[in-house]
Length: 456
Picture 1 (spheres, rainbow, N blue to C red):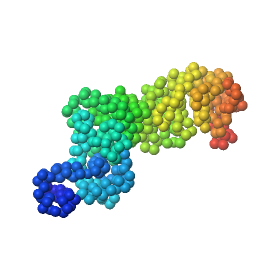
Picture 2 (cartoon, rainbow, N blue to C red):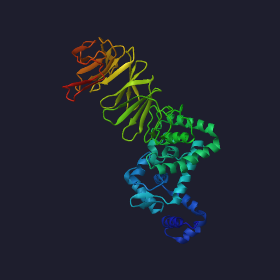
Picture 3 (cartoon, one colour):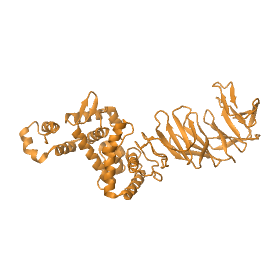
Picture 4 (cartoon, rainbow, N blue to C red):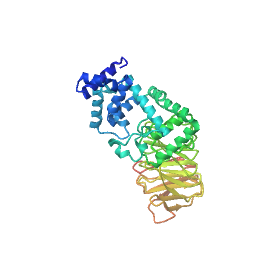
């Protein structure tokens, strides 16, 4: 057993489990069963359940002791707590797993063996020279296409939510060997074409959970490839590490970017936080909108505007919708939940300067350089009020907290209050407030709506 104490321990467990503690019977079969530590592990690995194998591979990916909850959260299809605990007990009973004060770990020889298994399987899957594992019972919900249960989709070659030195180790010991073997076998150009084919296959198979998209993205980055032109739309792109890269506009429309990280050198036209503070959006000068999570800087979604993005950007009160003005004088309404463009509002004839959602989300007000204020009904996209009478562009504008009034201002230094619920298509003026001698740059109501503050 290569003088390895672990191999002796595993052999002892094998004698107990499969030979009824009969050492003589084991010795009769030993020559056929074992030939050094590799064959010992081959035999053990073959006897494991699908879940037990999956957990072992994830422990090898983690590269250091981790908790049960961390390992369970890694699974594309999480097993029940009972299933996972039973699997860990079985692995520990076979001396394949160590429990270090509640932290689970593998001995080095197990890590090396499992790492080799993972690299070989993903390498062959990308080459399309092997059958992926069959759809085991625990993966039945995912088994619409072989890719859904492939190693490529079930395991991450690199995790972004770990310590930096662990990420470096994962790159050096997992991602880099896979990449180098593929380049040596295929060459760079055929490999890039194969990646495009796999992305198309994932999309056609409607794979909605898993690591395949993120693994392929990280493989391209490892190759130093320009990501522009690659289509990751409507795919799970988990654990993609795009930090330090220039934003080169891969298509992430509708993509699930769970645990993917971005830092980008980009030209930002405008930035806005959601009222809840949980999200913020950046409008980028190449017609991209990037939605970020405030707490951890994670990119939630990226979607393309039909025209170059310009100020303003504004969220609805609940953060579910985002209104965006473009240089084409149109307003686009986007869902922050799924990155879908809900509606396009057309009517302004010049640059749009100001946007405001009503507190209840029923209306959107817009003001522009065409000297009109428009009130839009969002359920239908209809312009229900078109308010004229301004001599200059309109901005800013704001709804009262109860949504009954709309305050607007222009370069004339006047503030006008309008009824939002009015039978008049041209608007119903409630009051005009004078006092400023210069252009008003800010308006805000107090929370109770009793006072309106203005600044110029």
